[in-house]
Length: 445
Image 1: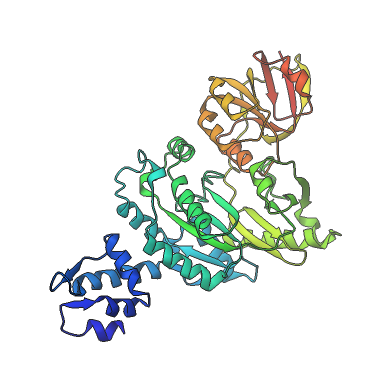
Image 2: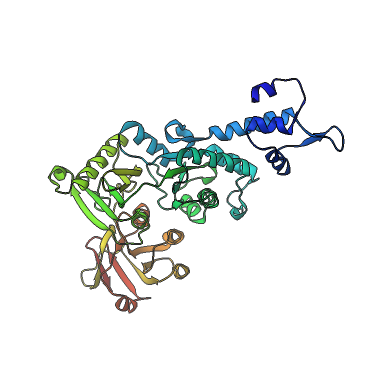
């Protein structure tokens, strides 16, 4: 229909002709006109509306372009899908491992939306004003309905700068689990886009010399897998940099509590030369899967996974970025200091400073240069703004959480799950303490 109509010699097309071309109702064409996509012409004040054929050609080209930039993972182009999605595509192509069904909204869509929203300076733009036009939304939902129907979804960011060989951007970019409904889906996509230039991401990028203005964001829309337990596996012990061991952390549910550090996970240490001796078939299969991914990518891997009771799903695989760090030692003369607590090493090193206790995110403002910070609440990645000032950290959660990765990337001596109780540690607030993340101790001068 499009070819037949567009090949005639008439300079104008009627509302009904255009509606047939796009397989929509005539009223939709009037809506497009109201939104400025088209401009009508009347031969007389009370006559029918007609539209310029060149305008329709542009609309067809734009519609086709948008449609082609939203594809299933297998047919997507690596340069347009961000690193996270690209790694998933590699896994899908080179292994038989389960990847949730995935639809990719390419970086070209984001780049076009920057133009459509007239965003010249994304660093100083009010992202609450950011809009995804109706014609984009319709194509996104058409693709979603075709691939997923009404199933709950996972909306994940896939930035061009994250999951690189040297920098993870761990936890800096948004992902949303169990999303239903058009309004919630569009809001999740908008928030993923917005997170590319979030304050946290800007600080992380600046510290590491990344020019965010040259980066872009793709979106991975995935079917929510029926997961019973989920977690993270590192194919090398990232704390002790021991390539002979793998570390696994997991909890019941979707795994978000593990990566966020908001729950202490189950921890397993697996010796690579003893995998076949494991009695737990699930852990044996997970370990072999992880080693296969390490082989494919040629480097030790940080892998997010889920298990539905029968099969293992892979949600993400990226290089471990912290295996070349040397322990930072700020105070090595601690033999005569009193031990007031213990913890588990996250990032090895020894440092001292004035203790600041963080009971809520609003307390971050009291952190000063050279402090030792005890985060006695859910770890929030906005703490990254204070990382350059912090001598040492004490936190809660696992050793594979996003913030644990960040602590190691910035080489800040860090312990988790301290044994000292709340009342006792309050006695030492605003006093100088020492974090010995070599022998897993907290000491007082």
